[in-house]
Image (tube, rainbow, N blue to C red):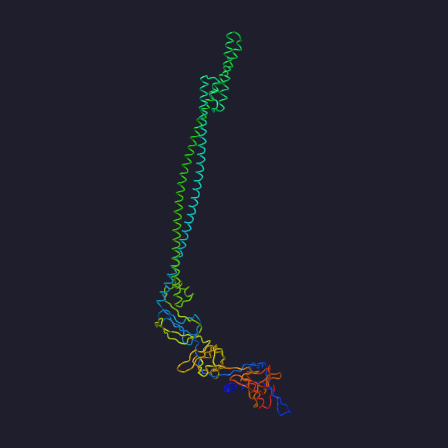
Amino acid sequence: MTRIGTIITGLLPLLSLSFSTAVISQDHAEEEHEEVVRLSQDEIRDFGIEIAEAGPGELHTYISLPGEIVVNADRMGHVTPRVSGVVTQVRKNVGDLVVQGEVLAVLESPGMADAKVAYLTAKTDVALAEADVELARSGLQVWESDRKVASSAVEVVASNLELDRSNQKVATASLDIAEESLARQQVVHDNTAQLLKDLHEGASYDGMVAVLEGKPIGESRSRLLGAYSALTAATAAHKREQTLYDKRISSEAEFLEARKELETAQSEFDAVYEGIAFQNRLVLIQQRQAVAQARQAVHAAEQEILDAQQKVKASQQSLKAAVQALQAAAQTVSGSEQKLDVARSAFHVAEQRLHILGLTNDDIAQIQFEHENNPELVRYVMRAPFNGTVIDKHVALGETLTEDSDPYEIADLSTVWINLTVYQKDLPYVDVGQPVLVSIGRDVPDAEGTISWVSPIVREDTRTALARVVLPNTNGRWRPGLFITGQVAVSSVTVPILVPTGAIHRVEDRVSVFVQDEDGFEPHPVTIGRTSETHVEIVSGLLPGQRYVFRGGFTLKAELEKGAFGGGHGH
């Protein structure tokens, strides 16, 4: 096998190193001898010997397909300027590693300056529009306060109007009562005046009682009539005593007593007469004054109602004006908010344009600072879109680049595509998900992958299809452009014992596998069955669970051969 020979060739320099002495013991009773290689753990690690347990596995049947390593097109990009400009700096060349966001080149671009100025202008417009909105909202709050004050004033004057109306009703009622009292007092006055007149004219007591029967006079009736009755009685007694005295029937003393009683009765009557006459006139005058005052109160109440109605009207007009001003302020706020929305939209468009031109959020945040400290806004930076390697470059200092230029090509070579050429005869056996062993040649270990895509069409010129394997390339050994061979596993069968082909060695003309036990590493002759490019079926000579060397067995074989030719070695 070609690969086995390659591995042996690679191990020959190692065989010249100083190994620990292998102990070879022979059974003198038999012609055959037991061969064991004993190594320390450090030696096992240094020699790269790897051990596995024997067990079942999938034995694959392979077909060999030619192929080529190409760049992973999903991780490759052309970095172009998004605005025209003149190159002032070139920082990266072909083969340079770049990280995402790293500067590739710097341009001076009037278009970038226009975009930045538009952004700054839009930002200023937004700030002004926000200030206008805040001012309009403050005005709206002021007018809302005025409206509340005007509304409260309307409520107050309306309450005062209702109070004035209540007062007017009270005053009117008082006037009615006063007028009614006046009318009643007028009757009493007239009746009393008639009584006084009759008494003054000397009417008889019984005649006056008959005339005044049923007419309202009040307490003056009893007082006047009582005093008049007493006066009439005293007068009659005086006349009788005068007659008796003149006839010398009664004494002078009795006559004088009668005169005295008459004078007393006359004085009392005059006093009552004058008092009632005065009181009668006074009560009527007071009642008339009360009516006049009541009428004035009614007039004042009516005037207060008129004043209150004027105040209500004025306050309602003030409220209406405040509401209209409030509505105007609300419209101003709405208009300011609409202008703010327009300004924000324009700002968003300007910001998005900068993003389209390749600026990051941090770059945009620095525009204001750059404008204040460096008026030059023409600087445009080309950055790496992702981590990768510069694989092509067409840019020089002083060159004018346009949006159609293609100055840089970057590829992420951490993975590569293995494009396998699938011939028409092999197409039925190749499908997505199949394992593939990829070989590139000497000194590069084979790699295992899986078919991720098979082209749905066949090229007309070659009648071949394309199968793709995405292969990790962390160490950079798989270089795009190199040709490879892919071994595609097209079928598989489960076998009881399966080992890699590198675990099979020919020791003393016997096909053997090195098995590890408590004594060391011993070659066990085995019988092999079905084979593939990578694995071998063990029919006998190796039991499941036994620990065998699947990598590094050539070192053990060389140690055995060195011990055999040297006549035996010991540690």
